Length: 80
Image: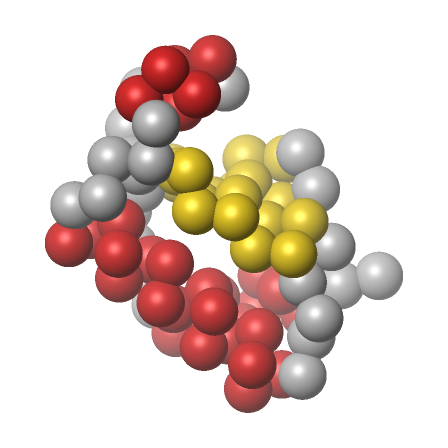
């Protein structure tokens, strides 16, 4: 599973990144997690609001921080 967190490095984006990493660790899911902070790369993906979370190419969150529970639910749902 590939997870991308998109955001310019603001505290909200950092929290999203931590929540996803912690959820993967707690669930024992070996996900490839990339934190993309480059504004041009974010724009190329069509993201207008950050933080954003993309799982296997699908935008699952945009413009808000997922709670720790939601992060776990997302990773469980998309874990193949």
